[in-house]
Amino acid sequence: MPEIRPSSDLRNKYNELSQFCHESGKPIYITKNGKGDLAVMSIATYEKLTEKFELYSLLKAGLKAAENDNVKPINEVISKLEKDIHE
Image 1 (spheres, rainbow, N blue to C red):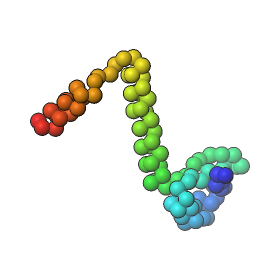
Image 2: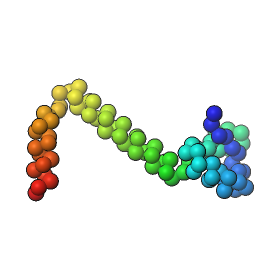
Image 3: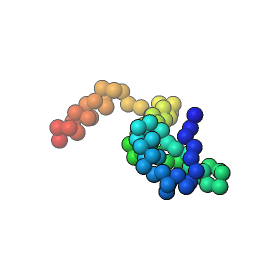
Image 4: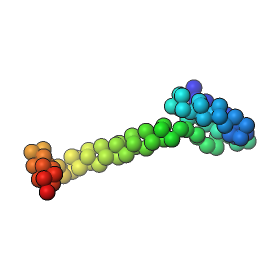
C-alpha cells in the first residue's frame, strides 16, 4: 500500500517524510487538493531507480540488435576489449 500524504506535510512534517523515505526505500505520494501531484523519494532510491531504467534500456537495445542479427561472436568482442585495455 503506497504512503499518501497531503502537500501540507512537506512543510509541516518534512523530517518525518524524509525519515520514512530513507528507512523504507519507498516513495511517498503527495496530493494537492485531494488529487495526486508528486512522488517524493530519497536520492538513493531515485538513483537505484534510474540505474535500473538505464540497464533495461541497454538490455532492450541488445535484444533488438540480436533480433536484427547485428551481433558479433563473443571471442571477437573479448579480443577487441583486451586490445583496447592494453593500448
